[in-house]
Every structure is written in C-alpha cells, then in structure tokens.
Amino acid sequence: MNDTLKVLLIEDEKEVAELYRLKLSLDGYNVSVASDGESGLKNATSEKPDLIFLDIKMPGMDGFEVLKHLRKNEVTKNTPIVILSNFDEQEMIEKGLALGANEYLIKSQFNPGELSAKTKNWFKKE
Image (cartoon, rainbow, N blue to C red; front, top):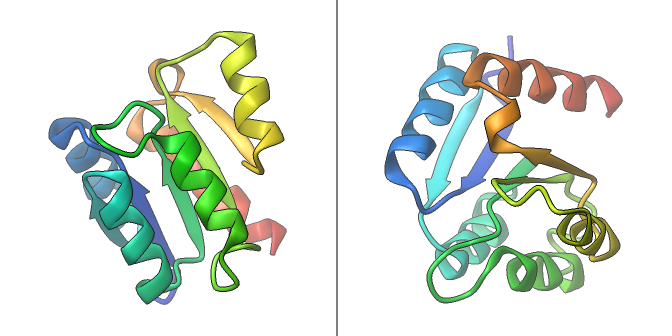
C-alpha cells in the first residue's frame, strides 16, 4: 500500500526512533532514521523522502538549524516537515512553524500508532 512512500525520522534518542520506525514500517512506509542533524540533512537530500519528522534537541546541529537548511535546499524545500519534539512551549512551536515546519507535534502526546495515523493524513493531503 504505502511501500513507495518514504519517511525520514531525524531523532537522536535511539529508543524513541526505533519505536516510531518500527510502527511506521509495520504500516507499510519505507522509513529511514538519522540520529543527528547533519546526517539528517544528508539523508534528506539523497533519499528525497515524502515526509520528514524532525526532533529539535539533538547533538551538534539542532532541529531549527536543520529546518533552515532543508527549506533553503532545492531538493527539500517543498517536503512536508513535521517537528516532533518534547518542547511544548508556545515560543518554540511558533519558531518551528515560522521557520517552515508544516506541523509541530509534542512527542508525549503521540504514541507510535497515533504518529502513524498522522503520517497517513499527511499523505492524503498530497
């Protein structure tokens, strides 16, 4: 069903990334994981995912920096990007959306099944 739809998960917490990767894979998505911002940028450019989930707090380059680069890049400038973060402060949400994120989700409010349902909704929008 969704085997051609590619999802990139840029998340530095291995356990969290694996939970989301496993659920999305079981639901038929082709999922790749990057554990930091720099590898996330490389993967986004080379793999051209259909949707990117992006964490904010990561070692090295944070999610906001990654988002800025993704929006400037010809390959990824129109790719839907959903921030998936534990930061729930309004200021952080507004910053993420202002930098070009399509949506901002709070990790603690979305289990892997709910995230997969959100993913399905994103692909319906296209």
